[in-house]
Amino acid sequence: MRHITGFIHTAALWKNKQFDLQQFEMPSFAIEKFTPQPIPTNLRLGHQIEYIFKQLLDHSENYNVLAHNIQVKKGKDTIGELDFIIEGIRFRESVKKLLHIELSYKFYIIDPSISEPIHRLMGPNRKDMFFTKMEKTREKQLPLIYSKEGQEALQSIDISTENIEQQVVFCAQLFIPYKQKTPNIRPLNTECIVGFWITFDAFSTNDFQDHTYYIPQKYEWLHTPHQMATYRSLYETLLDINMSHLNQRSPMVWIKKSDTLFEKCFVVWW
Image 1: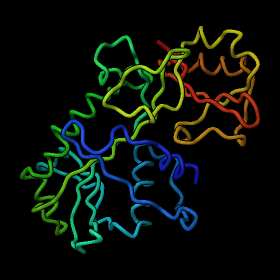
Image 2: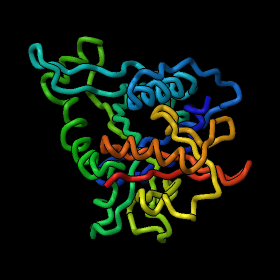
Image 3: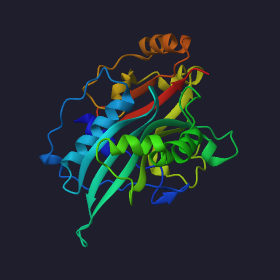
Image 4: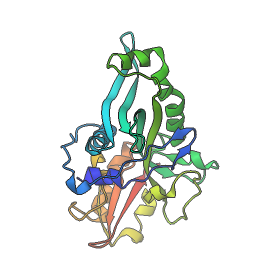
């Protein structure tokens, strides 16, 4: 259930329409009546999130998932994938509509040294830039549905692209620099900010000596930090962080300050 609640509580990177991309509005859920199906932890995190999104849509009374992870091929080569085709009901008009939805859930640090706000978001290893992902979705993934190959892929499962509407789900957990004020990221949503990022040297100081720590597995990155994890000393945690940094990976760390106070951060390797 922590996967599900983590996803539900993550804010969208923008509201309504930005960058010519309409944000899909998640329907409300009776979460107390929802029984999640197991999600394989050996899948990469992106595929786990697709499982979560599909389960939530299946649970909703507003939508019906017609297809997902649709492979688009040119000959024997896969040239792309369509995330979701769903069918919705407009309550007042009682008219069915089809939506093509591309899903993105990311973990970005914010680097205020970059002048343009929307270029400040990047993965904790300084790869996986938000702007690149947004442009790829807008310029390549969404138009794919109207290509000859995209239409053939949908026709093979009896779905027409006529009058289909395209929207996106762009959610993210954002992390600001340690001890800095919130940088400008307009027009993006500051409600996505959930923690901070910090260098190894700054994390090794007395500021962090009195707390305990847990390095979550990647499939736990969605979760809100909780007491059930096995927290360890700063010294033990620094040893593990150092091993990740040798492989140029920036681990997420949960900080337990008390039984009721937790924080979330990335300790960056660069």
